[in-house]
Length: 201
Image (tube, rainbow, N blue to C red):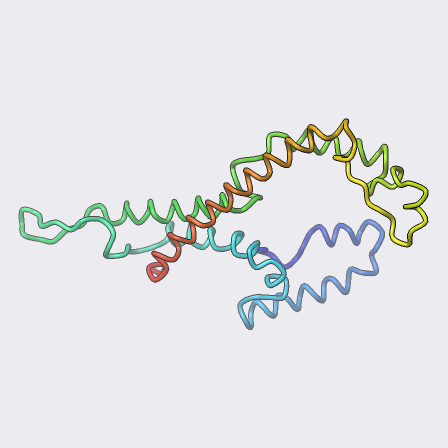
């Protein structure tokens, strides 16, 4: 979460809950003070993984774009014809390492991952159709016995034969995407751990 000010929360207030606006604004100002005084705020703690993936890749990108040097262990040293020790490949190798780290962290983030679920649109369309027909929580599918309970039973669209195929396709693909993002996260942290002490300028 790069900004403590959540645009969605403010838009929600202007759609009929305007009295909540001062409270939200005061809480956001508190978060600003927390970031200034301790480096992180309460909102960052709610989703540390989301905070990390939204901030750290950008930090590494800026380090790459503005750095003045590279780790000494990158590239290969050689002595030129004048007897001077040189290393022409140091900076290029460090750029590649940083680029790979940035790429992997961004692929681990669902919002920036290049791979998307090809069934997303079809699934959302089916979900909207289900909500229109049977209610958001499938209320119209409740039996008389379920209606009498204090907490109504929730019904999902995969319970109906007409939605089972798209639901299964979407979930299978979502599982594959999650596994891919986990692999990217693990590889990114391997690089991050290996080069941790070199992430400075």
